[in-house]
Amino acid sequence: QARTEFDRVDPMEVIATADEIEALLGQKPEAVYLLFPEDRRFPVRMTDDLPLRWMNSAATPSFQGSARPAEFYTFQVGVYAARQKVEHLTVTFADLKSRSGQIIPASAMRCFNLTGTNWLGQEFARSVSVPQSKVQALWFGVHVPEQATPDEYIGRLRFLAEGLPHTPLELRLDITGEPLADGGDGDL
Image (cartoon, rainbow, N blue to C red; front, side):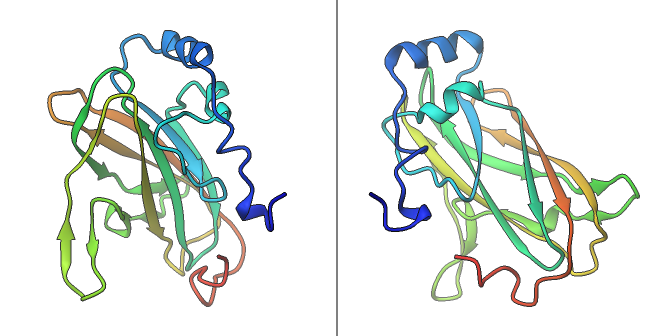
């Protein structure tokens, strides 16, 4: 009985069973942690359980979204520390490139959990660690230039954790439509 679509508990708060999680981990026996990219319409809310929705994704190594020119596009990645604690997690970005050669530079991307500017206008950098068997949502933003031409832009994010090999995540953004005057702020 949710008040709005945003307030619904499904699909992100319907938990997976222990057997379903075990089957998922069996598909990725070498992975210490798993990445679950998620659209902003489905906020990661649980930190102690995995959503049933993720059991079919098998921790996909890519995310695809759709944005408009001049939009500040947001999405998230759920990090699940499957087999041990993940310490000092960092993310690096690569340029997003279109087939026609247009570029959205890596400098237009950020992870709000790791770096930014606080409410006092001061820059900050945080260290993020994820305890074993827990989930940490990392929120990302991409400032799409107003002059971005309609096309598919492809790049990579690299997730790095202390003592562990990096984990790549492909990012695909379909840029379509007219530029947004408010950068997307009008859409809650």
